[in-house]
Length: 410
Image (tube, rainbow, N blue to C red; front, side, top):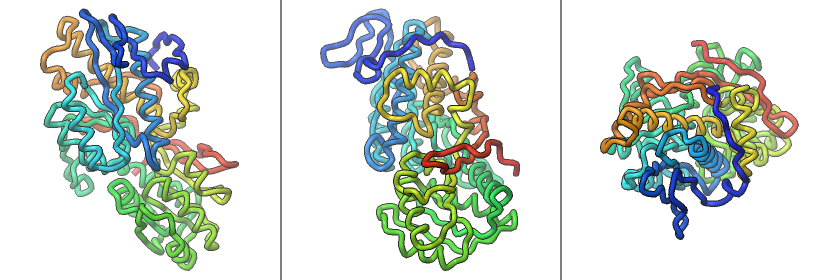
């Protein structure tokens, strides 16, 4: 990790709305004023801050906030103060699109971190791209976002040059899970379920393709309505199918109850999912029978990375009441990628932001490269993360424990 001298951040800063400024003072209405000789740059954040997925969304928001405050304390970009503007998309594409338009309308916004959901990203990309406003997602994994709808047919085309992500894709995550389930867990018969959404259906498809290629059998498939919590009929189907494992493409608010009801139906088999179920809330919803359930998530375990120890300590020191969750480290690195791009643009323009700052920041993002808390942060020609590492986690003693890290070998 690049060495930075971090000053301890107080809990008061994290809990309040105070924004640090290079010069000037806080306005009476709580907004920041950078004074006559400073420039305030806003980093937008879009994530579900309320609703079922808010645990993940608040971890994203707080981690971006931490990055902005540390950049200010270091005076990382001379004459520039960073603040964040966090908007709630409630995991809904329509809300995400409205938020994208709002962020575009604020000329101080030079970059956006988010969203959480691939389906929300689909609704935002064009809005940001037309405004030449860079977007860096810490969590989107659907391959089509960067490689086009024909990504799996041998034709990869980048749809939007303003879109980047620090998370790896389901083209890797699904097969990685299939290899672990088949080769390591020795499960040969899978029942595949998804929530019909962009992320869940895409992930289930890439898992299924690899599992069958390895020699596994798909003994049943089903789709759920993500607005319900009664999965008893599907649980009965799973029991009758003879499956020795269930793969679920979707997110933890549905995956937790689904796992619980499958076990209650008499199918004492593990439920496996992607990063969308990798949350402490999954275990709360699934209950005691969740032991042995599995999830894959992007990257290596943050707590075990030497490069991330400082982030974990500073996040705790800052006093955020919500955990950084699965995407905290990636959100922090996404924010720093924007900060690095802004720094490059300012330095190339004699210490000032140019009039076409958004376009310049978007262009600079392509060449951003630094050692972040999640490892090396850089992007390939599609805007995808060059860091392809993944981890399998298992529920043990009421918590997620990493059981294997590596990269997909296809």
